[in-house]
Image 1 (cartoon, helix red, strand yellow):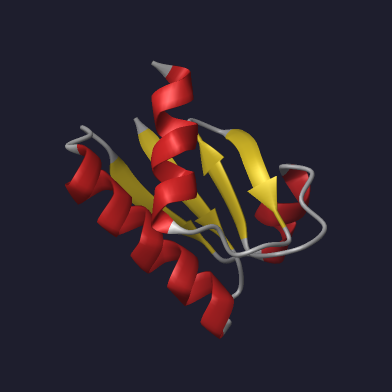
Image 2: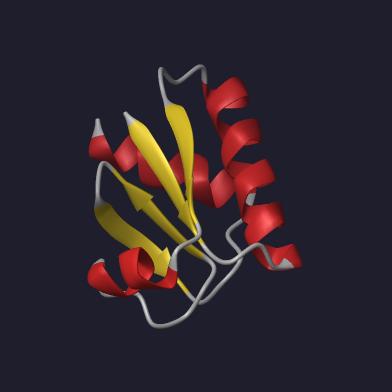
Length: 79
């Protein structure tokens, strides 16, 4: 599983990345984290507000900072 953090590097984007990494560890998921910072790539994925979280190329959230527990819930819903 590839978890993508979409954002230009603002504090909320960095926090979302940290929460995603915590969720992977706590949930014991086999996943990697990729940061996407190029605006053209972000817009190509249909995201207009950052931070955004995508899993395997599918945007699951945009424009808000998800908690670690919210990310765990999203990942579990995909299993």
